[in-house]
Length: 492
Image (cartoon, rainbow, N blue to C red):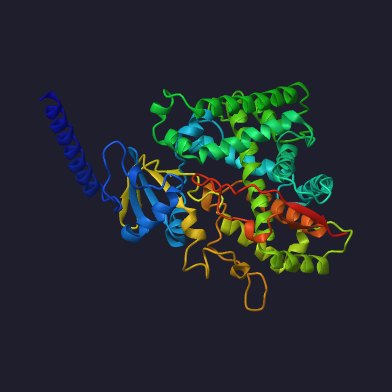
């Protein structure tokens, strides 16, 4: 009897919540979306391994602007180039908010560039962009750093002597050393065990964030904090990464010469000292630690994963690799390192590198945005405190933007005369005021590292091209490519 009464009460509560949600949706003029259950929302409908695929499918019924519930979190999903561009570019001021993603909040406590909003975000973004540019990001100075690091990478790959090896750590070391030069003012040896352990933490953190377990933490953080599981191991490892950063900051404080800044940390410490009397400044120790953590994480794993995926693509399509090498050989002399100026003379190579990024679709759901106040968009109201997902996956794979969106096709970026052509729907770094601060650096790294490698090596794998699977090993927050043993055969 008691069980029956409990079930009836539970049913009535669910019915009342459902009616309330319908009334609220109508009153607020929310975008349309599927029916959501109390507490769990639309989670049962989502592909737990690739939720962005479910969102894309749902948009076929509910349109390019739709509402879903991730647990209790109301979420508006923007699907397709037109909707994403209209929000992030045309209504940029309305969509600058960043969501308080529980995983990121747990790690940063709301400090740093990625997770912040308002004046904190404005001060940190302006300072970070200016400082990175001053240290050469997107310019000749940075080009020289990357090319110097490419020599170390080539030497390491040469040491494999055309036998199978996993390129993951070589690529991670190379990419990470570029951001380390910018942020810490130093590079690390590929044999430095502590450096390698930090790279493993970064790799594991991205994999965890892209796993169903990591997504559960974002949806039910209050529950996951109380349950045993791998999330506690991951957070402990991230603390190790933060301790390394704090140690580097202390070393910089002990040797700081404000008139001769060596790197990003020096510049931040100098600004922190200058603004100490200002009660509204965001230049404080917590923001320094978290912003350096943001730069170190984002500047390492996403670009190195793109390079690793690029090698897999070239192994999968050896004729594409051969054609790139022929073009590179025609433009760049045998003993000369490539430079960014070469890119305009390498249209096919440039097209392939763009297509690699498009196909990988590294962050399919973007870093979520957030409604800091009620937003009017396309006749709908997006209420304050709504999560907003500009679905980059739907832009990079949109059929009306790309001739063959689901397959590798460099001609997406070539005109009828085989000249390179831009496509406005190429948005792997997002768009608008919250686009990736390291975009110009990442583009430079992808071009210079891969062209340098193709100059010197032909890449293959023990199982042959047909053994390469380009589908990701993990999908959710990020698409993480599969790992392969590869063979790098010297060309000369």
